[in-house]
Image (cartoon, rainbow, N blue to C red; front, side, top):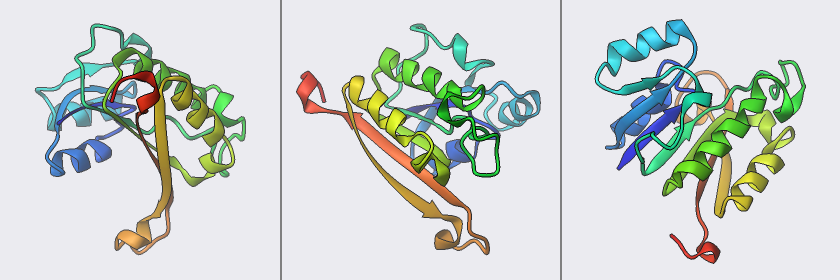
Amino acid sequence: MTFGSLFAGIGGLDLGLERAGMTCKWQVEIEPFCRKVLEKHWHEVKKYGNVKNVDEGAEYVDVLAGGFPCQDISYAGFVDGIEGARSGLWAEFARIVRLLRPRYVLVENVAALLDRGLGRVLGDFSASGYNAEWSIVSSCSMGATHMRRRLFVVAYPNSFDGWS
């Protein structure tokens, strides 16, 4: 399976997907430092500098994955919610889902998304013909010595729209 990475950061999610046997086709990251790290480890992978520049020319991928900015959602952040200047980039994520129609979508974000935007995320998936399931995973449940709760959403096409 192939994947495209939105809001790639330094590639943590990408590394996990590769270790699961998937192949990265492209990455999107705007921060210069993060782009340098991505280039070092994934020099052969196409890069987009801005999520707003991903269009119909992007190569199709089986999985669209990413963690859109959490600063406006996090309890430690600006509390503007999913419509905030940074977390509002969810709209670009949803646009790319509608554009590419991947088989699966993987979204990662802070646990506060449950209270501050999950309804919008699920509504956008539903309006785009996708079902979704979600769960919170804590780092300590994976062997880390700290608790860092993350929300993961997996979406997939519903059968009502005639495609699977």
